[in-house]
Image (cartoon, rainbow, N blue to C red; front, side, top):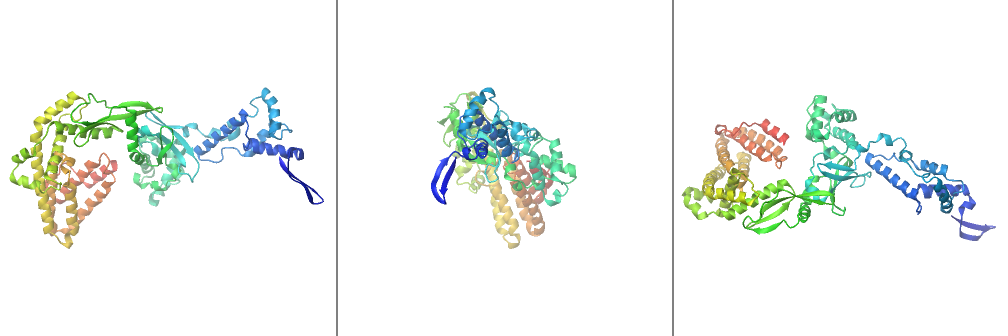
Length: 573
């Protein structure tokens, strides 16, 4: 249609009249119809081919997002030529088209159907569908993947969709390798992020990336570690995993995680899976609890839960939701909860079982005090705890932890609990007394250190004295007895004696002390990065043993220790 304006000797006779432009310029009207209605899709019609072609174009656009290219879909001129070759010359409007297509489709219904070859030209054969999968498989989980090609978008790149109820089951392992189709770009970007003195040995980055990917796969381990080893071997230089500056990676080369509810609506998204798991932990627990039905209980004072299953499984939204039942310490009582992970289950169930034992096998502070000497009783008042009662509770927790470990650890049925309770009832008094006497000696030593530090107060020794105070505070603090463990307490005595020896020698050679302190502090700084890993606690005690080796060698260490051993342990954590 067009707007017609008629004038006579320059004066308007007709203004704004709608006319069929096909009568004015049939060829241009036909071209406009093809371009706007058929190619641009600016047409409301019921014809099947029209909607199928639009869906196929959407598939190709999605492929462009996956491959991160704008040049896969052919340009509009190709689509125009396709229709131009098939439509008769007199089809110049929707009305003309409908009349013609009614007859033409009866004889050749697929005449106007697009094909992938038409829409992609030669590019389709260069793209392997396996390079851009629709889902990420991790064990029995199948997590949908979507792709976005929009640098201004928060989800630019690869997005893995995680249902809330299985968020606890997803491990970070493997996501650092990205999808195969983006891996070469990712590795090249990592190589370019290396410090200049390292990067100059591994150029051009694209060639080294290609070589790396020919020889490795995600099964070989974390990407940064595997790549560092490969480059070190290939270039003959030292390359460490932390040499790569991942902050320089473009956002589209890092997986985005989107956590969805049961309706598929997003709850949260981000690049850090572990942070999302922490952020949504309450919602995950609620979803798992709901899926587990009426298993949970509260206010228990004895074993009333029968045989506890180690795991419960429920199908939800096509995924297997797993929960891990555990007794949990509620303070004065015990509850039964279904938790998100086995790690949470082990920690919680240990605490819940220990609370049941405390309820079943009470201890007497008065009876314990009668067995302690006057010096030991006095030493308990030096504790950093809020009260002597809090210290005894700390010691009792440590004693129960020790006895539970000695007699098999966690129990999951009433018979196992009854057997454990009988053992604890027999051995707890003696074990608790032994721990309290050891703690009394530790508190005496801590008191002597505090007094010695006060005596040495001098500006020239301030750094060393501050370091000694910090070390003491890391060894003796509210809750240190249970946190250290009964077996570790005898080592704590040696660590405190080493502080005393250090303070005795400090005034005679403060420069030597400063050098050793600097080495310890550098190690401690490196240790902080891995403190929360599984190896963290052992590395922490290795540093204490190194202190003994440096400041009080005559006391001896529990095992061979050196700065190199500690650095190796940190690197492997």
